[in-house]
Length: 377
Image (cartoon, rainbow, N blue to C red; front, top):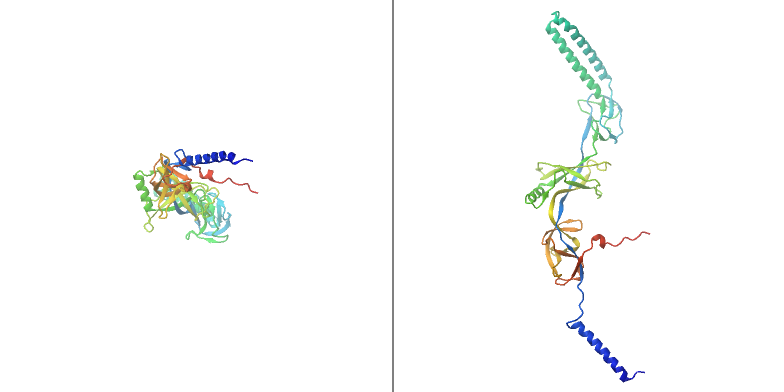
């Protein structure tokens, strides 16, 4: 058993210990909490393609309306509706009998005219036949030759062939139908599907703004033939093959104030169909000195004003108002308020306040911040 005299030194020692701790927490040598750690990104200028999204429709590169070039009865249809056809492939056969008879008659007339020329030729040299009669025979032979060629052409038109390669649609006439050259009876339509066009329009106002920014050296134009176009299909998917801009129209539509642009896309699987609506994303120019700031580091106030928190050279935190432009992935384009080399806080904003000293460390990317995927059961 410890007496009172023995317990007193212990109590005095504990009092001295706690008193000493209290002085260390409040005195000149007091314990200091370490500055909070924040993730930062250091802004660097980069070249950024300037893009615009515009609506448009798919158009075939070539569209051919197959029409009758002679009068007659359709004997056969030689193609499968909705299939791919090659240029020169037989599509229809029109009854050739009357045109074969006309060609036979023209051949006989030509032969007779040529024999007369051959008979007159030696006679005209000895003045047995007048020069006029000989010239008439030569002219008649030439006319017979022309008639024979026309008859042969019309006979050839009885076999209707595909003028271009592409996808053929429905048969517009059937076996036994009477077609007419004078009425130019439409028999089928062929559309070239690969490659294929995407036609879209841009406001003349936006076009002029782009030109002015280029002239002011704020933007740099792309090299001819390098402007790329990507498509977003009606179901929201992105078309896997990029296209190229072919040209911009040189006139403005007076009713809409729009300029038409045409791009070309490969279409090996014929996924793009004529008349289909799509959204085109067009690279128009390059902004050579663009600053991007991550969206998670931008604070949007109640009045819509944007700001960020900067880390100064002394590692203190200060607010900075900025103006932002368009979104690029998970970043904002900075229009004003920041410069290259600025250190922007993007992680840890919730645990700091302006004026605090912080410990800046490189921020993690979105991929690094994402939780690890869990294995499925």
